Length: 129
Image (tube, rainbow, N blue to C red):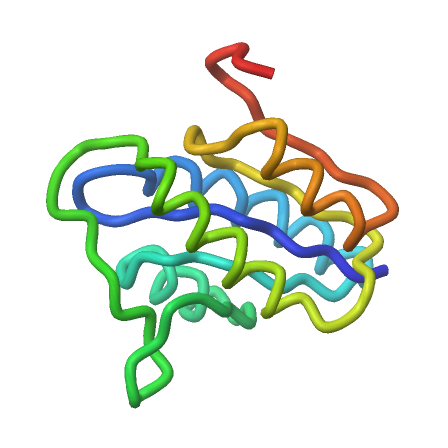
């Protein structure tokens, strides 16, 4: 089974999202499933790589996520638009499961993603969806 996890984390925001998703990823890997992450911030992407998972996202020439979260904010509509374009480009084949752990989401975001998976899951700890 192919599992694709979307979780962003950096010094200012989101490392808890990355850490809980890493726990899920390790459980999936332990039972033989392939797990790939999408993480747009450098610190989160580096943590994911340290745990031995493939990670895609905005990359510099060295293949490392190049964005940093300089302030605490959930994200803008423009950032979400960029995220969904990048995520959709990074998913080459239909995934069995996509797990999203981010506050900057909309129904449209989920509508785009659901065409790339058999099962779309959202970790929603603020009860937004």
